[in-house]
Length: 314
Image (tube, rainbow, N blue to C red; front, side, top):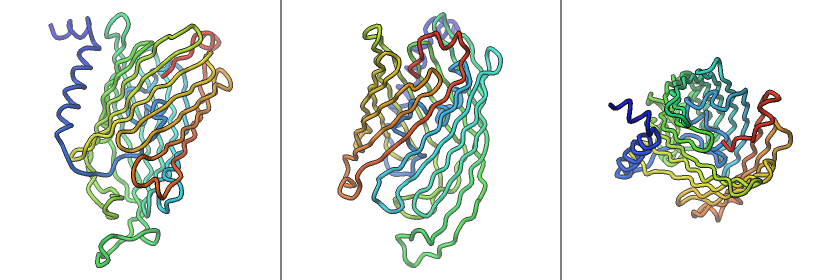
């Protein structure tokens, strides 16, 4: 009976699960260090959800560089590179690499992602994803200091920590929703609020988006990314993007109680997309920073038949 319900209306089942998850998380309070964040999160899905691997149907390579809070010493600088491709008709494989520097800390994440997809309904596919890898964690206190001057500070040099995660991704040609936990392990992490080494906590991610055809030449996609760390409040990103003539993408994004952003993307060739995002912080940090900048490049290896089809907006 349960399988029949999922087959008949998979979107309702996943949406209900997501709403229950978000409602429960809303009651949790506190502060915790977040994983690296990106304004162009709609192009960085593999780093968030392993079930996304291979879902576009061809080889997909994405690189993003983010300079956060320009003008503030020790502010985050992050780069990510993802590569994924389908293998066969139902499986996908992907590689995700992230380099994150904040204050005295450096972290490098390297993860291998695998997905398996089933036909959930006539219009929707449901992908199950797992990931495994590791991260290198380093702290050089010569680039920073602790809030506790009496603390005995010890550098950490390339400590290897495991990462294992999983995700679900329900998608069609016009919509998607996904839930994931990028890493089940909890270990050491640099806390930029306390300027100290703290315990990592579980991260939960919810992504969703829907594409509307406003005209033959204009597409509109609202999307969201919800991030939560156990013991911390939700972080919610909301975005609205437009695609004109399948070549130019313009949009706005809002990160709850944090920043507003402008996004632009240009389809240089059928396989090459270049994007840029600028964040203006709405917090007290606006007195010290000129904002955050993000550059994205995506390369897709499509067949001639795939190039003739209307490009996907996610």
